[in-house]
Image (cartoon, rainbow, N blue to C red; front, side, top):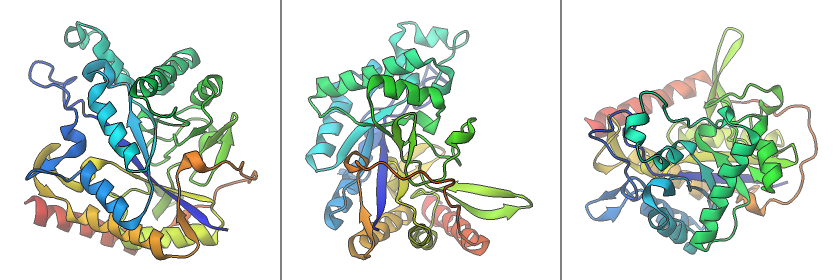
Length: 331
């Protein structure tokens, strides 16, 4: 059996402190995705060029509710560029953007703050948000999305009820190290599972050290996982029969930031990790880059997803690598 590896890219604009300091800050649109440095797109542009070079297709979860503030054009152009390069464009929803639908949003912040947590919404509200996202895809003239990723990987069973009601068949909403759902049936560490008729591909979760009876959980991400860890986890997933491995990244992770503000230059550490992963997927037998929309088979039920692990020593080396990179390249 081939292990499917899904490189997923959350593609979203930045609130940029507008809810914290509305008098002086406003959301940032395309620059937060393209990340231009010296006239080149070192965020999305670099990412698309790298995927082209290794012939790896990725799933881009494109956030749609930002159209409440920016209108259709800015993210629509980005979505068309991604689709035009042969990648899978799917639905990402951050409900906090709908707050800008209030003309007096800046004045409302003190009495009625924005809510970006989908678990605090009803099934009907969630189904309406999904329909808003699909309507945006229609206005963009793109194929209807068939996969959903909720903002911040916040999720509960109501999300799947709303997806089933809306006829949306696939999801990648779970990331236990980022947001642990309350329901036991959503405590999924990886693979592919059916939840209320929806095919769910959790962001792969692993553990890097044990503190007494408790394991420290990590999500498989380009920024948070070193290449030696990533390689170990991929082979471990294959040995344990995990059908799907899901990796998470964002376009802005390939440039430099300090205190959440963009600075000149690129991030060589995350670039090395991405390029080694792409090279691995292109050359290593038994693994194939995959897009969730292409997965049609229903998984066989299983009692539990195996826990993937990396040694604490490897995790320590990664922490040192990240720290050193910040000291050297961030100053």
